[in-house]
Image 1: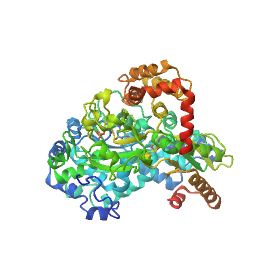
Image 2 (image 1 turned 120 degrees about the vertical axis):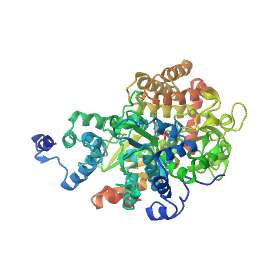
Image 3 (image 1 turned 90 degrees about the vertical axis):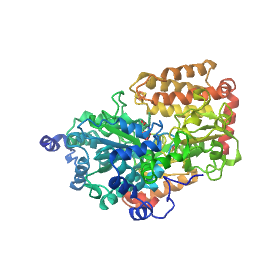
Image 4 (image 1 turned 30 degrees about the vertical axis):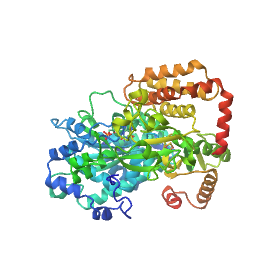
Length: 443
Length: 195
Ligand SMILES: Cc1cc2nc3c(=O)[nH]c(=O)nc-3n(C[C@H](O)[C@H](O)[C@H](O)COP(=O)(O)O)c2cc1C
Ligand code: SF4
Ligand code: FES
C-alpha cells in the first residue's frame, strides 16, 4: 500500500502550527513553484498528475483550470469549496482541522498557476471552530512571507480569506456557493455561463474542493508523473475516504486508489469489519447522493470482478448495478438496517435542502418523502413503490442543478436493489413494526 | 457611503430608546471584514456580518438588527431578510442561552440519533423548535453536521458533542445549567471549558 500523501505527518505533534509544518518539508512546494516554474508549467504538472475533483464529480482538475477565461481583463478568483455537507462526508473537516497548512500551500500554488490575487475559502457555518484554525494558519503564512505582497520576492501577490456559510447544503453546489459568497440566497445559477467565464462577481472563477487543492502541493513536490503512477488507471493518486455507519472503526482514511472495496471494509487498517460482527447488508460509497448497493454488488461487479475503490470500478454497471465514488463518504449498513427507513430519512434531507427553484426538485422531493413516510409508517400501498420510481424518474435530469439527481438516485437505487423490502413493508406492516421495536431495544 | 451613516442615526434604529448598534470595537471588526471584498461588492460581507450581529444582539436577528446591518452594508433591508430567512443558522426569534441542534440524518440515525432526540424531548419537556421556560435551552433538529463517523452528534452553539448516549447528554445539560448560573455565559469561555 502506498504511503500517505495528503495526511503525511499528521501524527507529528504540533503539525497544525507553521513551525513544525515547515520543518517537516512544508511550503517547499511553494518555493519550487514560484521560483522555478511558470504558471503554465504548474498547470501542466497538475494535468499530468491526472488529479480529478474530489468534491464529488471527479472532473479533471487540470482541464478545469484550462477553461479559465484568460483573455478577460477582469480579476480572477479561486474559491475553495469547504462547504462539506454531504451526509457521510467529513474528510475536508478532518484535513483542515489537522493540516490547515496543507490546504493553504495548495491554495498559494493554485492561485499562482491561475493568476489569481484573491482567494476565498467558503466554509460551512457549522464549522465555525475551524475558521480560527484556518485564519491562524493564514496569518502564519503571511508572517513568513508566503502570503501578501510580492511573495518570496516574486511579483506574485495573494490574499486568502475565510468566508463562513450559514447552514445550507445547496451552497456546496458551485454556483449556489458563488451566489452565497456574494451575499445572496444560495440559489444555483443556470449554466452556461460556467464559472470559468462568469463566476464570482461575473469574473472568471475556479471552484475546487478542499481535498483537490490540498493535493496540488504534493503534486508539485513529487511531479505530476510520479503522482500519476500512484493509483489505478484514470483514478490517480490517493483519496480521502470518510467511513461511517455500522463498522468497527469509523474515521477518515487516505487510501491509494485501486484498493479493493472488500479490503477497505474488512481490513483492520481501515473499517475493521462490520460492528458487532454482523453481516454486511449494503453500502453507499460516495456520500448520500450516490446509489446504494447491496453487499454482493459492492464487493464485486455484475461481471464478477472485484470492485475497487476507483471512479471507474465503482461506476461499473452504471445505474443497473453500479454506483459512484462521489465525495468518498462511505456509509456501511449491517443486516439490521432498514432500507425503507433510511431512504425516507435521506429523502427528507433532500426535501429540506432543496432550494425550491425548480418544481421537479421542490415538489418531487416533497412527494417522495410523503410516500416513503407512508410506507415506513404502515400506510403504504403496493402502487406507491412504482409511484416512487416514477417521481424519481421525473426529477432526474429535469432540474437546474444536480441536487435533483442526488435526491432521485438514492430512491431509485434503493427500490431497484431492495424492492422486496419495500413490498414487505406494505404487505406485513405489523411484522415490520415488531422488527423495528426489537432493534430499538438493542441499541 | 455617506447615506449609510445618516441611516444609522435614523429613529428607526432606536428601539425602546436604545440604539441598535455595534460597539466601536465590533464595528472595527465589521469594517475589516468588509475590506476583504471589492469596494463595489460590500454585500458579500452579509453572511459573516449577520453571524456577528446574531452573536452581539442576543442570539437572534430582529427586524431592527437586520435593518441596521442593511444600512451598514449599504443594501436594502429586503436583501437582508431574504438571506436571513434562507439559511438555517440564522434565527429570527429569541433563542435559549444554549441552542441544542441534534443531527437526524442517516448515518447519525443508524448509530442512535433518534434515541438521543427522544431523550432530549423527554428531559427538556419541549418540542423541537421550542425553548425551555427558563430560557436556557432551545432544541432543534438539523441535518448532517459533517461528523458522521462520531455519531450520534449534536452541536450546542459552536461546540460539537459526539458519541452521545442518554447518560452523556444528561451530564452535558447539567454542566451547562451550572455553568450558566454561576457565570455570565460567554460562548468562547464555555467552549474552552467543554473542550
Ligand atoms: C447539491 C450539491 C452539493 C455539493 N456539495 C459540495 C461540497 O460540499 N463540497 C464540494 O467540494 N463540492 C460539492 N459539490 C460539487 C461542487 O458543485 C463542485 O463540483 C466542486 O466544488 C468542484 O470541485 P472539484 O472539481 O475540486 O471537485 C456539490 C454539488 C452539488 C450538486
Ligand atoms: S435542483 Fe433543486 S436545489 Fe437545484 S436549483 Fe433546482 S430546486 Fe434548487
Ligand atoms: S449524519 Fe449526523 S453528522 Fe453526518
